Image (cartoon, rainbow, N blue to C red; front, side, top):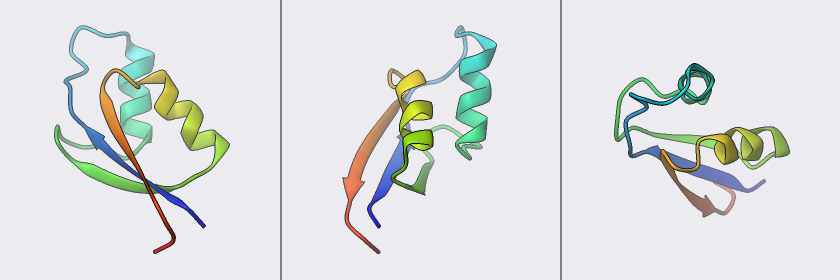
Length: 62
């Protein structure tokens, strides 16, 4: 199954609480951290909500 490598690149300070919550739900603890999630509609929706704060790389199966 395809995976998404998501890197948190921009601070969430000054953005709405729901966007901060989405960053936390994606598994981020600190800025410039990278997490790997399976490519699913749920994760894609979360990434779309905070697309201005993260960078997404699409990868193949691990």
